[in-house]
Image (cartoon, rainbow, N blue to C red; front, side):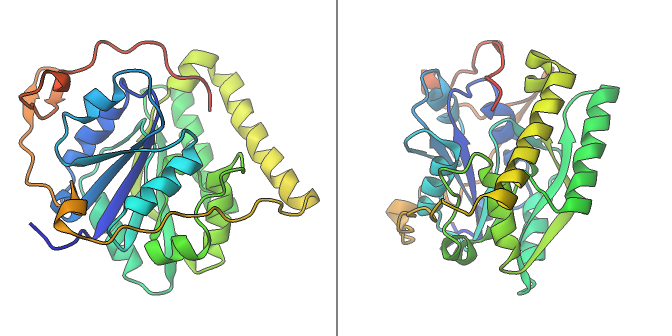
Length: 284
């Protein structure tokens, strides 16, 4: 077991029993998981989210008041590593070397943070169009969303006050403040995100909603002075054998099944796989 993790992954969840399994399985396949701390921050889930997470022994589960920015800030307070990587619960990683890529990018002292390419999951021409549009926006306008897996150095995160908890587009705001502290890099690997919102609310309606949110954010920046103050971040934990929890997991043995890779099995009945997916969560 290593003395301290090199990277901490922070995942906010609330009522995500049908999505979190795919993300945690994809993390279990990462090449450097044994040098990584995984912190899942539950915001008062009312479903079986916590039971599902308990089936993954490399995860440290903590609790927070609900609110994505608030939960990510709380997770940063439990982080033991000098590098923070924020992931959404409905994301998955198709490539095994994402952790290596982050550490390689942040080895450059001039780099303050970065993100990954976006990919909307699904074999659909419209989803491929959205994927291309989002990646074009990222490169041309330097607007990166949280579903692209934003990462940064822990000291920079604390210097800029973390995520603003009263900012509707907390991820866009965070990236702009991060870019003021150094270079922001876009890695070649892709973070896939679920198409559940497009499937529930319709492709065109969902696309227009996201564009509207972006334009409203830009309008607020141009017409209103910043009223939000940096968040009061919790004091980071000091590494210790007790506090480390899931910081340095033993290698995880996964079982191949006809449906893919099964989650690690624990003796507890709470680790049983969740029931078939229900309707997707409301539009963020």
